[in-house]
Length: 237
Image (cartoon, rainbow, N blue to C red; front, side, top):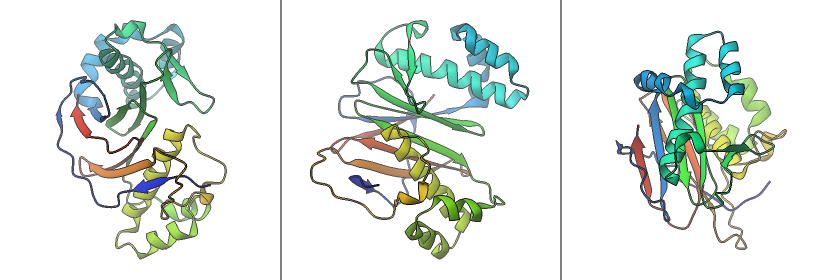
């Protein structure tokens, strides 16, 4: 698999402003939402859920999983509605075959969502984009996953890293953010995708850019976007 990919391996250190749905223009917006902080607000907006979503919510056993599901369904409607200047209950969500979300009739409005633990991350752009966040699990047995899902170059990077657990989650979120941005989702042969080697295919005027940062000290987030020299803005809801 090849693509025109540019990965910034430096550690991004975002400055988070209070959320406001500014015009995207050529900007890319990353929004973080702390679920526990917003759960009361989310419950007050439970009426935004469709009947099928309410039935699914009722089948979820663990409270933490209920909160994640509810926050995801509510907040994507509210925030997308603010960007598109329409009521949240009028947002019509559609999903591709690989479950990438988009808004019906909005060809120049792209967004993506990811959640892990107490954080939900969203990305918004005029161009295709993807985001992934994972809670760092120091005791996670990543070796088996690495052998089946990582390219040999990625395995080499991981093995040379002073903290292999952190390196694993960085590469994993980079891969996921790219696959979510392209709409492919998790492919069967993840090891064919080499994120250590940037490609420069000149026929693609809009390369994929990937950046990565830590959230709250214990979560790794990577995001992928397709734009020329975009201004990245970071918001917290």
